[in-house]
Length: 228
Image (cartoon, rainbow, N blue to C red; front, side, top):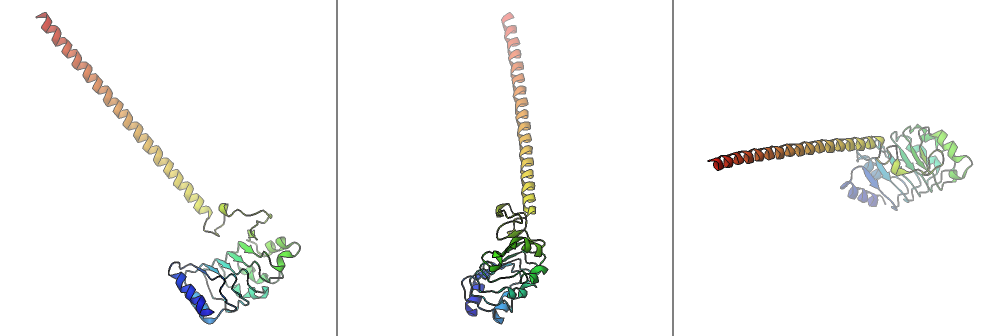
């Protein structure tokens, strides 16, 4: 089991050193070898262990840069979440279709102050009265619960203001700045084109004046010849 998971990790880090996806791989527990392999990836910020028959989070690796963790479809009880409280930079956690049953099981994760997105859909806890209101009280910075905002409206990830997908307000500001720069460049090019056109018009007028002067001189010469 562990060998298969490590082989998949080695294959993935050849192409991407910040994201590992282990889905539908049988990993009932996290072995010391698997823990060490994941900890060796210094830039790892996204880890998916979905549908891995995972029943325990004991020995979960220390991943200081991890911001996204997916544990969907595993046989995890809520008591196992205590093993994740060291993930101080965690922003997104997906626990749908697991066995989380009570609010107390979530409280160890309240130390994850950066947590902005949480998925508990399909858990026993999600069926309790006032579920959404109570979860938002536990996590003060939470913005998205089960793909809905604090008001219960479906969250539009394409207009996401937080940095869960790498699409932040700063990105929008950068795009606006780029657009402004493009507009300025277009205006400058337009001004230059206009100046060139004016220069061409002036040259045409000068050419016309020279032609008129030549015609007048030729006319005068012809008149002198006629008088003689």
